[in-house]
View 1 (cartoon, rainbow, N blue to C red):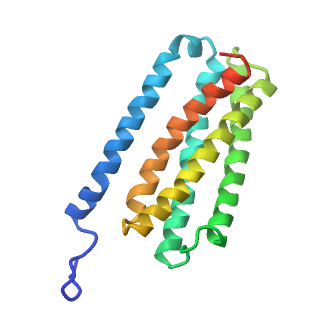
View 2 (view 1 turned 180 degrees about the vertical axis):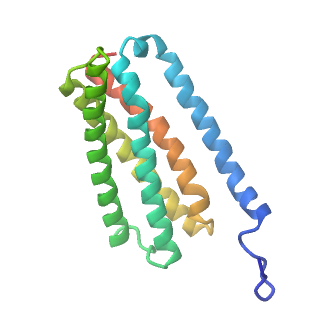
Length: 192
């Protein structure tokens, strides 16, 4: 990479490692916490195979759509479109679009889990699966999208490239909040 004038390039190996390593260490800790949460509920979750099918796909919805939102916001910052949080149509429209994708995906997941679990002989009533999914995804999307917007703006404001922080952190946060949301839904519906 060439130097322009007397400036050093932003995308150097050392720079990428220096900015990325702390975020990746935090996401590793978050992954361990998610594993421990699931481990603490192992016996009750094993008794509900349909929920075991639901967990991986449902927790990915928040992380994946949150990462999509983070990428859109990062692009907006790079293009100079993302300065005002409150009245910014880029933020508003991106959150609305990501929310629609997240809700439609979660309903699709509940249908697929219902069909798969019935095919394998350990089905759960569809309305129960749908309730669990919708409660969990509302919790997950609310927390993940709020964190995505906050981290994106904070990164931009403090001169850190949001591409280095938002996507890895939000993907792991989606897993953590998704598992927590599913357990909250199971508790609210008195299933667990």
